[in-house]
Length: 540
Image (tube, rainbow, N blue to C red; front, side, top):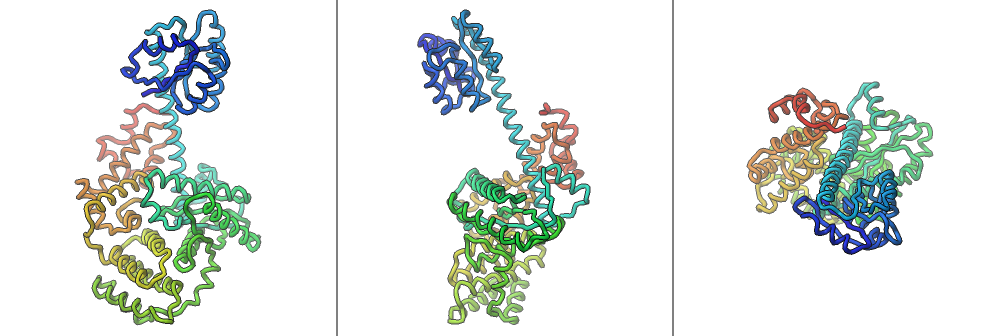
């Protein structure tokens, strides 16, 4: 429904307007009415109607002044003025200022309906334009995020291609040095269980805003990218020659980001910091080092900044896992022997409750060590290395705050089940439905990125085989078909925009290979992308 607000100091005029047409039948609703321009101003700001019908001459705040004040805050609200013949010169002034139209007293019902329907069409078009512009900004941001993720992952670009990408996304790096920060929301998995999708997006948006404000305050040049793991990566461009003086400065920036988040939000963050690399092409090294720093929050705790030097100080750990014990655990993992592996873990952690364990620090070291063995064996079994790195960080996130041997032991057994030994199909229907809903939500938010069951397994902490099974049980279809269908629907929407080349659209919806995108589009839609584009109304 299109909301209409009526302002006139004469009651009979307001009544005449209200009873002259069948409002709902034509898609309108009367939001409210007022007899005074000043009182109307406050209500209009509150109710945000799409159309205002206002008398052009009223005591106090007249229609033209009301129009000027509303337009400053609500530029898309359309004004239709009511006027008598004696005030028609004011109407001309209002139309010159941008008013939509006018009607003369006495009000003719047919003329009123005609003007309102035209205003309705204009409102629908304006709202569509706003949505299109928002989508264009979102799409450009998504492409920028994908490009930065590619740099952080180590993708190599030819010099000309790299320069073109930097220009396209408004990125300028005048200095030769680069540092990466990895910002992780503490207890992220437990927090997000109590939030809906919009709240999760708002949490991410708030974190980006705080980081951007602090970076700007310190006069640093930076860029940010949201990682598939849910962390926020920050790339800082610094002078390579002055790194000794700059390193404490960068750490101060990171500490202020963490402090500001703690002050203004309901969550805290831990930030992993890297050392310096001397070229953009080595950014993946910096990103990996920041990730390793972040992993140490298992031992060092949350709500802090962790630099490589902090990690180095902790390397003088006790040898809690003898070589022969490590060899035996690897053998059991390789043989997928769940009972024997669990028994070994029970025995190992049961023996570590004595005086030689200083909890939770060394328990954290031991946990990391065995966790590393599990993921190393998972990589040998064919799991994607990049996805395993994300999953491992998610497991470390779950270990936050643990202090007891039993807690670490049970988590390790669960990790082995999930990622290597294959989890049981346990879990009631409610849990399955929740998992499928989260799978869909992840696709809606990340369809332009690398998405498959391995990624979702790390995101939801479930085995990919199990996820595939419950998705089919719940929906009756395959996850890959659902993902492809959603990507195709988004591609069709983007094809309405003249600004996007088809090759760009393919990348925006998750296809690096345009020929493969073309093939899948033709297969699912019955015609090629070029043919489909000719059938739709184009948006500039």
